[in-house]
Image (tube, one colour):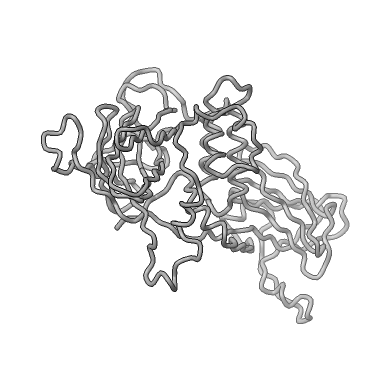
Length: 421
């Protein structure tokens, strides 16, 4: 039994998760890492009256005229400035935000319906620094409590736990009945390695599977030793019984958040990506072909996947979610202009992802890369139940726009890529 570390949005899981409210929490800012600079929050003792009884549990900041405090806001989260027992007007405080570059930009706060709070809503899918300042022309000090929103992501209701055994059924296999030799991948932040299999660009790999079945194809691209570009566009073809079934398109960069050990040796690989294959009932021969070499493993979804499913399983199960959606057989290049022109709010998350990849890679559309990145940011804001969407949206900004970080996108020599800290 294994648990998939899914990197791409799974329409089935999101469909089940979307039927449950996402819990919203407000964490009182008490110190680092939420508090960064300026006036530090301190515990405040209540005065004994009913109005201030709740404030004795808060850490508050006392802002005299001209004073400020700076807090860190995670991606897709909001800031709430609360005044116990009083009213807050937008002119009582000044808000400025920054992305860590040192440039502060003014931001407009919204007053709550109760009138005792000012809210700074999320803006984009990246973390921010927010400076809250009492205007120098204000009269008297102001005591407020700072809160940062937090949404507790629910666990995956339809996980992929069962690893599918891979046999060496390829034209070069001497004995198709023998299983392929796995390679063991271990990220530097994990204690144990997991078995993967090598999928070269050629020849194709053939598997025998029994449907109906939904598979998660979890993989990492293997960078050629002489590769000079960090961004890699590639496709995985899935043929069923010799006929084209699904085409999965990906755009990926190298894994820079952690070191990946392959059989005990560090290797430059792409970030973890996952594609999903929906297979109909019956016995099938599944053929996989990739345009770039990669390490992969197949994880199967069971339904029901619960102990005592009548008591523990959600009412809307994975099988129902799978039956309610159609299988996307074509690639992103099969999308028509009419499909690309549809409003985002009328698309499913899977359709939004395919549309963003097409706009980002197709040079026929002006500012297609920026449109793709902004569409991904909007999808991350609309689907808070999928926290993995935020870093994916940030990755698309680097892939499809001219905004670059300090890391290079190419290297002047053809020596093997290597990242060091």
